[in-house]
Every structure is written in C-alpha cells, then in structure tokens.
Image (cartoon, rainbow, N blue to C red; front, side, top):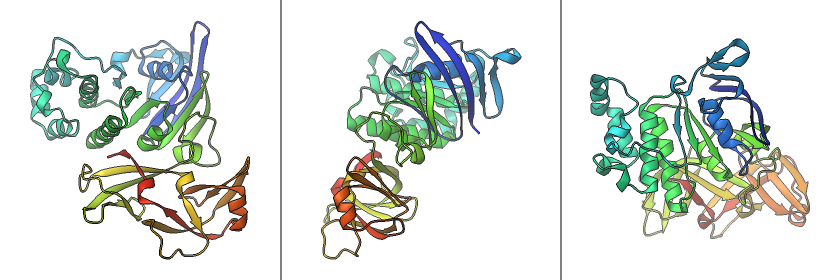
Amino acid sequence: MILDFDLRLKKGDFHLDAAAQVGGATAILGESGCGKTSLLHAIAGLSRAEGRVTVRGEVLQDTDAGIYLPAEKRHLGLVPQNGQLFPHLSVCKNLLFGIRGRDRRRQVLAGENFQGLVEALDLGHLLERSPRYLSGGERRRVALGRALLYQPRLLLLDEPTEGLDAERARCALAQVLQATRILDIPLLVVTHKVPEALALAHQVVVLNQGKVIASGRCSDILSRKGRVGVVDEHRNINVVHGTVVSHEPEDGETHISTDDGLQLAIPLDTDLRLGSEVVLSVDAEEVLLSTQSPEAISARNVFAERVREVWWEEGSAYIDTGRWMALLTARAARALEIREGTPLWLIVKAHSWRVLIG
C-alpha cells in the first residue's frame, strides 16, 4: 500500500471528508470544485486537516495520536498547476534546489539519473536560462524535474496538462511517465480528465462534493459497468499500453506491440520513437463486432475475444470481454445474439486510435 489517508477539512461552506487506501500510480478524479486540490494539499501538509496520512508505511499525520509532520518534513514532491520556480535561480539551480550539500549536488549533477531526467523532460537547452524567459509548459517541466530529483516518497501532480493543447498534453504526459519510471517514484495526480487518469494511473479515487464516492482499479471504476458519474466526453474508453515497434511509410502505418501481446496498426506517426512507450485509446463506440471471422475488410485491427458480460442501458448494449468494451445499439446486439460466452471478433480501424501518451 503506497498511500492511506482519512482526512477532514472545513473551508467556509466546503467540507472535505475523504478516506481511501491505494497502491501504485493513482489519480484523484472529479469535476471542478469537488475538492481534488484541497485533498492534495492536505496530503502534502500545505493545508491543516484533521485525520491520518500514511505514505509507504510511514505515518506523516495522525492527529488522534498527536503526530503531524509539516510539509517540509513529509518528503513529498508537489508540482502545482503553475509550475512555481525561484525567479532568481537558473533552471539548473532550480532543479537542484531540494538537494542539500554542495558535494551531494555535484554528485547528482554528474549522475545518470540527472542526465536521463534532463533528456526525458527536454531541458538540456534550458539549464542556464532564467525562469522569466520560460514558457508555461517549460516551467512545469522544470518544476516536475525538481520534484523528482528531490527523490520524494510520492510525487503529487495537480492538473499536469491544464491549459495545454492536445499535442502538448500528449508530450507532457509522456514526459511524466518516462521521468517517474526512470527514478521509480509513485505518482498521485489530480485531474478532471478520464483519459488522463486512465493513461497515467492504475488506481483512481473519485471525489464528489468533498467525499470519496468510489476508489479502486481504473479499469473497474472508469471503463466497466461499475463506473461512476464522472462527466467527461470519453467515459466509454478503451486504453492500451504498448511499445512502438516499426514505422511503415509505404503502408502509412505505425505498428505497436501491446503489453498483453497484441499487434496494432495506427496511422503513420514518425514522431513516436521506435522502442518508446505509448498509450493509445479507442472509444467503445468505435469498436465493431462480428460473430464470424471477418474477411476482406479494410480495418487493420482484428482481435478474437469472448464475451464476459453484457448489460443494457437506455437502448444501448455494453459488451465487455474483460480486455475490451464495445458499445452497440440494443437492436444490433439482439441481431447478433450476443450473450455471455459468445465468441466475437473485435474490429478497430487504424484511424480510430488516439495517442494519449507518446
């Protein structure tokens, strides 16, 4: 268990009363004003809440037992939305700020982790620059690097792609994923975007009006029957993690090998580096189904599956294979006679995929 919290906080008319136990990369998800940032700040010790916080087995706060570590002693790395930096320090000095001792800073500066992080976050050309000459996205990358070099028990991110367009958001998420894996640091990210939560996290805590209304694996809470009412245009979404294996310019395709052994074709995207990690998504509405092996079709992705569960909502049928979800009209599902255990072929056009991270 990475994080265990049970916190209560009152700010004017707002009441936070939230508790959950999570392990691994986790997203705090909810609509604006539900208390996500308040919870993040309470965990970080920036807001004085009542209750308990335990990270990696160490008690950071237990007000009943008289334990309360201030923010600077919790050893957590917080990256706020605005990427706050020290304006009088260069980018390099900002990165090293949390590391105490001249000799230790020299060791870090010469180490592989520093070089790998600078490369992952594309900061090499910015090291001597003053923060006043950085864009908003560059400031966030520096703040992320500083938090990671601090080697925190837990990295806390507050809306990491807020205000970024789709392409910059995709690059920012790739940098977060790569950087946290280089240093093996667990992640807690605040977001209101379901695709972002699915791309970065394995577990999710869903907040509504200051209370936890669901927590558990992302796949169970957000992509399956048990999902909760989080307003987002991508509620019915399949997310796939994989590796870029080849580019085929003559065919107009980039090929992906997924973590669970599938081979996918997406439209040619040479910006994706060979061997790099990629996270893809496809909406359930874009997944076509056939009860017979399809022949002579244009779609480039065909997978044999078996139905695990079918459920019906307002004239629609949700088909769950355990690995994939498809959304059909009720009439189409009845015509195919789809039921639990039915063998199916899932068909996805190459252009239906979106790159979330890569």
